[in-house]
Length: 292
Image 1 (cartoon, helix red, strand yellow):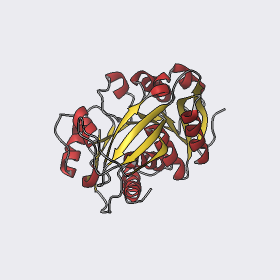
Image 2: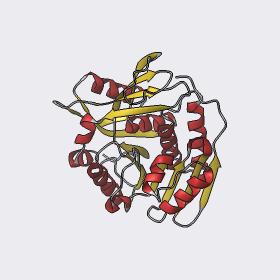
Image 3: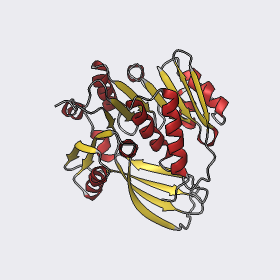
Image 4: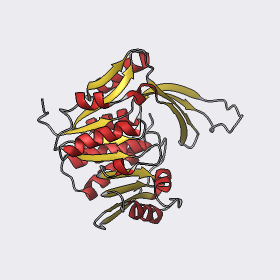
């Protein structure tokens, strides 16, 4: 059955996160004494689906977990936040995706992910979710699943005339086949450097330059540059730049996913790109300033 309500459809990763807080991140061979730790439900896909749902739109997740404690927690988290999780496949014999994120006293972090069941997404998952891949919906992808799976989902969505947004994180080269199916590419400073001309992105002007470079290959490109701001350039040459909102940073964790979820939700609600970017920029700034 085709949903009657427009939907942000997230195809991608679900990770059970172990969050560690310490004075700094360890260097090679170093042991650092931490302050505290706690578990959290994440994965870029899961975070983005929850972010969109909190914005008041219908949000649905296509993903894979194992039949284990982490997998059950991840599905329950989606349910608790109102995300349609009927297309999250439970895979016996697999292990659920997980990550360890280490935060320093400045609120920045580094993470290691173990993809587990996320790498098992396949054509079966795309076919089972055909009712979601329809015109009027927005499909959101990330790079925490195999490119072959992203390519299948994107091709299915474009075949019916739907829109596809790719958050190319973590950074990796993208095939020409996948790139041709993307309507909106969203990358941070590091990802922009990897995918464009290799120049560092530190300022808002750098972000605009990187977006210009990437817009040769994508219909619209959004480059988020942390404390510098956000730049967007589309294939028609329209450019939008937004300085970052000034807030006291508590933690940057999840800011990119909050940005993506709100951007997709705002576009689904009919906002023009400038308004959607303003909403996403505000939401990300609010998140990094909150104690969680």
